[in-house]
Length: 120
Image 1 (cartoon, rainbow, N blue to C red):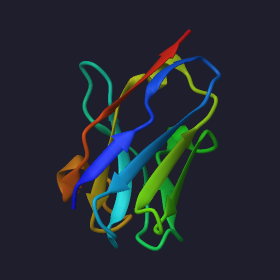
Image 2 (image 1 turned 120 degrees about the horizontal axis):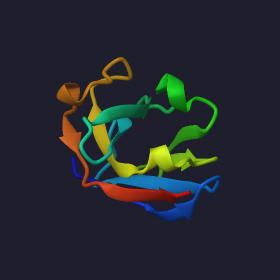
Image 3 (image 1 turned 90 degrees about the vertical axis):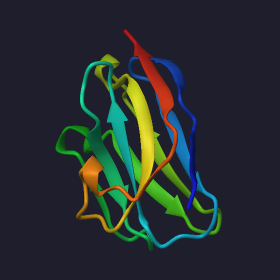
């Protein structure tokens, strides 16, 4: 499956963005988001199960980010609110075997990244 991420951009601190990850075909994979800031390792952000019923977030992002899934559109969304400069990174979506897999090494397929820049 191929994944296409979009929706990144430049936003002021406190603003919002919604990222989209569209799959090339219907998939039952869990879909996750990771991010990588310059000079940093790629880190887990959030994941949603194939049926959309289960989600998991990195502890530091709970309450600000919301992941959702529309399987009729083969698309997963990441709504990001109250953005902070430290959220600046390239965001990647990825196909995962399940929501318990939250390490980059466990990813089946990566989408290309989308840049999110939060200005102070």
